Amino acid sequence: MLDPFKSRANLDERILVRMDTSEDAGVFRLDSQTALVQTLDVITPIVDDPEEFGYIASLNSLSDIFAMGGTPLTAMMLLAFDPCLLSPEGASLILEGAFKALKETSCALVGGHTLEDKEIKFGLSVTGTIHPEQIIANSTGRAGDFLYLTKPLGTGIASTALKAGMLPEKTYPGFLSGMKTSNGPACAAMVEGGVSAATDVTGFGLLGHLWEMCQGAGLGAVLDYNAIPLLAGIAELVEMGLVPGGAYRNRGYLAAHVTGTGVPENYLLPLFDPQTSGGLLMSIPPEKAKGLEQALEKHEVSHWKIGAFTEGAMIEVKG
Image (cartoon, rainbow, N blue to C red; front, top):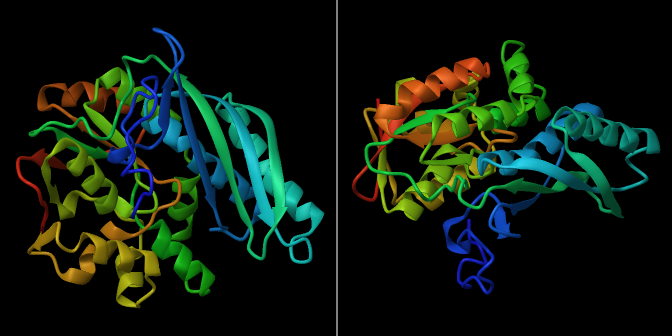
């Protein structure tokens, strides 16, 4: 979770978010009314179907724009593959999935690049727009804010089970549908609701991205373990040891910052699980919470209130 840019100060006053708070995207002011929101994200296949992979990878990239409250504008594709292992038809299907995701989010494709690699990789560089005074950062939460999550956890664990041929039938529908759900409606809801801060839950897991929010705001957090949604069958897969290495690495990195009260250690693993195209994690003052819930319901976004920001410098998960 080291970032080589964190030690460098912003060199241009037009850059509107700090590099040391692990924001989801960079923001560059064009004028008093418009700023660019820019991101790049590339992943390896998480499902077998190439078109679904292209669709999911694209939503995963677009999510960084939505997490800042921005509107995607243009995208460029990056596809890496071994032509001896991936056929032209397979590559075309990956791109078809991406075209579908971009069309659904009204984001224009303006180019891309391919290169040879031993492992398939695909993703987008996305540019969006936002008003300079309406940026939703991950580092601006406040003590007492409620925390809301918009997708269940467990995609990394489910993907590990899928690759091993051991994914339960009851897990697959939620696993796939969650990753194929755009965070665009959740973005619209959180803008309407007036959230204090937000991020999307991806490679560092729920607790890793929550810790980034805590560090940026100088806060701690308390979570209700029983309120945190998991995909069906995830607890059983953890018991079977079908947990990706990234979850253990995330847990090791956060060991000094997370404590569990009344929660067995292994039960916490889904909270460290690396997510692909995960949900948005939002904080909002209690007096605005009802309005956010109404906005999420209006935009048909699933949501769970999972905890709150606190004074201090630890994340406590209570069973």
